[in-house]
Amino acid sequence: CPGYPPPAVLQSRYGYPTVNSEDVASGNRMAVAEFQFQYYDDPDLVAFTDACGLENTVEVDSTVGGNKPTKCSIGIQACVESLLDIEYIKAVAGAIPLEVYYSGTFSLYDWAVQVNDDESPAQVQSVSYGNDEIQQTSDDYMFTTNTEFMKAGARGVSIFFASGDQGVWGRSGTTGNVFHPDFPAASPFVTAVGGTDFATQSTIGEETAWDASGGGFSNTFDIPSYQSDAVATYKTTADLPDANYYNDTGRGYPDVSALGGQVNPYCIAYGGKGSKFSGVAGTSAASPVVAGIFAILNNVRLTNGDAPLGFANPWIYENADAFNDVTTGTNNAGGRKAGFDAAKGWDPATGHGTPNYPLLEKAL
Image (cartoon, rainbow, N blue to C red; front, side, top):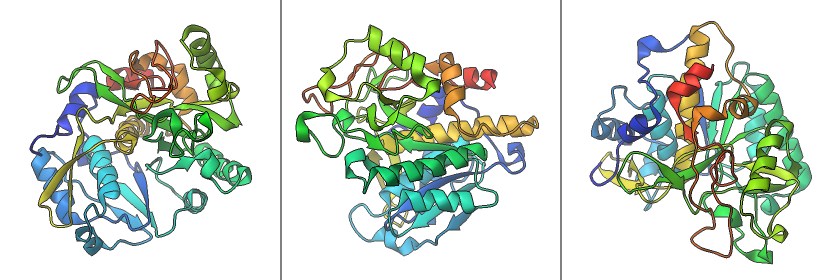
């Protein structure tokens, strides 16, 4: 991956182990969801594996909804989103089996229903799609979809969503001179993943909030009990933007973060022939990384005869010290009018920070 950091950088920073085939606990699985012509192809997955020197081949073990790999060689950036998701959740989680859910239409409600209709769904699900709450068809749609997320969590499924790549302003920008929270990232029954940058370019170490990382407070969902103390602490200690920008009683997000900014973009293989490489940034990169780490945590639990983590947020907030706290940066989307500052503890720019795997495993 000439000019772009390989996945080994993530492993060095977050400290997770390599999971080989003999290490995989019986029944442990993970999944990503893709929509609207985001297919994948094996030549790019093999090229990524080889270029990054991975011990385990990046491959998809099963697909729901079909795949058309020839489409990945058509267009300028065909299949980039799906390849990013697949390449990085597998780069992190190694030999843990991966399933891809695909739909030609974009409905997160339909996807969630499909997961719940599965008799044995993958215990970790990563989704890199979303829009502003005000762009949804209705509040009823969000509440109904949220109920499906709740059901999945109760069944032992952990759902991770990218928090968005437009900072506090969302896809709607500065329209209305208010912040635009993301759905489903602001749902209280998913784990929202924000993005960070290395504080010093090309130096593995401290991180800072990526200025375009989605975060803020929901206009639809109230503050859930599991984060009430963390949110209250932030609001009483941080330098807040004008209260007219956001809903003071809304669910705060993201919950956690991982590298996703533009200082050191992720290396991906794309183009359908295994011959093109490029750098890609975004919380779409951060979400599968965190999901992969939680798939490894599930592997430990299942190996020990314990149940998977399921809905992860209460456990995350109870074990906030198991994350690398990020205390600098603002998610104001490139210096626009305002944003939320990262701060000690939870904040609506980076959540509780980035994974510290040794501490996370110790907390199980």
